[in-house]
Length: 158
Ligand code: MG
Image 1: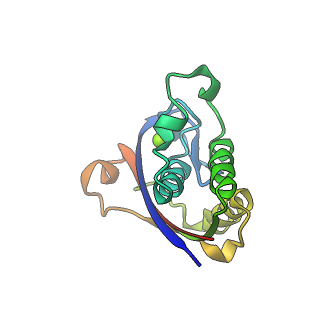
Image 2: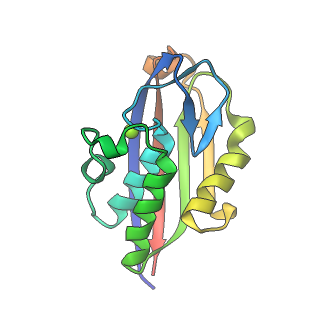
C-alpha cells in the first residue's frame, strides 16, 4: 500500500454582517468571513491538504478568486471537485485532522455536525475525520477576533 501526507493552512478575516461557514456548517453568528467564496476557511485548508498530498498545487490556483464562477460558491462544491481529482488518481482518504483557531463564538457543539458533513463530501466514515476547535487565549489576530486560522492534515492511501 502507498501513502501520502498533506497539510493545508488558511486564514480569513472576520467582519460584521457576513455568514460564518466552517466545515460546511453555518455557525450562528452576527460576524463572518470575508471571502470571494462562502469563506469556509476550514474547507479551504482541507482542500489544500488534499492537493498538497498529491503535489497538485493549491486551491487558489485551481479555483481563482478572480473568476466569477467561484464568487460566493459553496466550499463543499470545491471540496467535492478536489475529491474527484484525488479519486481520479486512485487515492482515497485514510483520515483527516483539522484544527480551527477562533476566539468567538464557541463552536465545539457544532463539531459532530462538521465531521459528518466533511465525511459525507469526502465519502469516508466520520470516524476518519477529526475537527478540533481552540481559541488563542485572546492573543494575536485570532484572539482579537479579527480572523480565523485553520490547519488541516490528511493521509491518503492507495
Ligand atoms: Mg480561503
